[in-house]
Length: 431
Ligand code: ADP
Image (cartoon, rainbow, N blue to C red; front, side, top):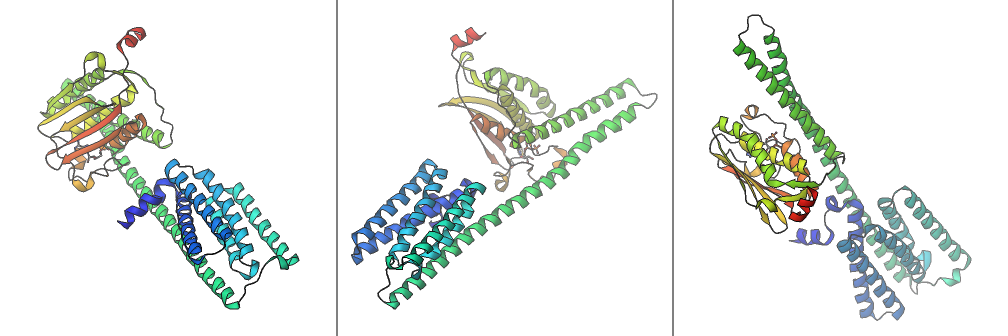
């Protein structure tokens, strides 16, 4: 419950980045501390000037927090926050009797935030500002000690100083803890990514070697003298199949690296969805028949409604991947492909009566290189890239993919894409 509330208030560093997380947390903390200050000021009936400054500070930090939380204006908030904090420190330094009070040490904490929040140039400039600021304060106090007041009693000074030290200590601990936990989490992520990459390489070399061995082995067999025409045909067909399998793997690798490096482009054209479904149906019908699976496809939209603006190649690739999987992971029963219009989206479904996906694996199958550990995995070749490529394409197109599955019963993959209908008259013009 508490975790949920904290997550709602300041999100997760993984979601918004460490520096933004720090800004959110810091502005919220400052707003809460400010509010506490206002309450204390009012109860102790302190001077109106002190109370007013605390009210203004609380308001400004609340606005900064809301700007970040609701409008995601992190950069501007970062600058306002540091400048405002420096201004408050200067006023507080003055009110709290200069170097006899604890405020001067707060500059160290401000500098820690500057180091964590800013990049090279800004970091340098703000650090310089802090150094100049401290030098000016030194100069003022050195030259005009009379300007700075004195604690009326030594006990008040001691309270202020030691209480301040404890607060700064807590702030430093909090800051270092947050920074360290973020660092460790990032480190874990890098390690996991590294592990997946190694597993991927091992799997890839198997995936590439198998068809390569097929090609080389059967090419060697073809050289044998006195080979019957029948055998020759069979060997050539195996070589062909192995070649296609290898080409598919290479295409997948190229696609995933394009996606990862952000080089994947989108080409939006008028696309006839029924036509795409028809192609996929015709392509997979023979394979399904050969496996003894009942394969059907449904187009629920009228012919004139089915032309939309989208990336045809990507839709085709997504459907290819999902139907290929459905047939690959189904040994008997049926596979059905279809789509319907739901609000501003088209929702496609690919339903199979295959082996299904275990509950604990369902959340990971869209990750790169992940394959559910099957006993007969070798029987069902694959590199574990198809679903992650499909998911990336659907994300690029502005849609969403999900799966419902029961182990041993079958799976249904659903995905949506925005429905941007091209009216018939426009179709006619373009044709
Ligand atoms: P692969 O090349 O291994 O098929 P994918 O990324 O396409 O890679 O799929 C990842 C994993 O998800 C597969 O290894 C398989 O375990 C599981 N999977 C995908 N589609 C289905 C399905 N229709 N039925 C059962 N399991 C599936």
